[in-house]
Length: 217
Image 1 (cartoon, rainbow, N blue to C red):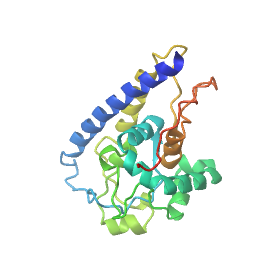
Image 2: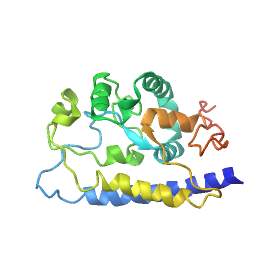
Image 3: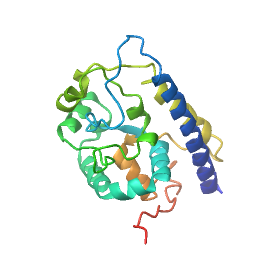
Image 4: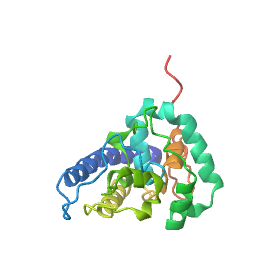
């Protein structure tokens, strides 16, 4: 019973996440208060070596909506997840860790053969709210903290809204809601693919079934 409730909650959460993406994109389409225009555009991958911290629901959303892209990215996702497992835990939750990850020079596993984001329409909020006003060459050659960031009021509001969605979707589960699960995107994607989703107090909710990513016949 509880496992079915978890599945229903996550389905509802994925629907709400799509609506949140639309609201954020509408805000980003407006002129910035500074009058500066972002140098970021679809197809640019200059900053796609940063560590991307996401919530489990975002990883589940990406996998559910982009099975072919995930299938193609699977070898790199496994490689990057293994590197993260072997790295200090603070890689995902400190400025120092972000700099250390940047120096690993790992292009995002979700970039396709042309260097474009293969899940662009469904990219995480961390990617969706990141804009800079500098030449992309600076983004590619310098640490992320050194470039001029344009905040449309969504860099904090976006994650906050996601937290409210997570709380609202998971709270009705009998016995209490699941915890919020933040982590580095490659690790979360592998959790989803391998059926190792967020567990609450080790009561067996981890066993959610594997997602079939075998090549199509």
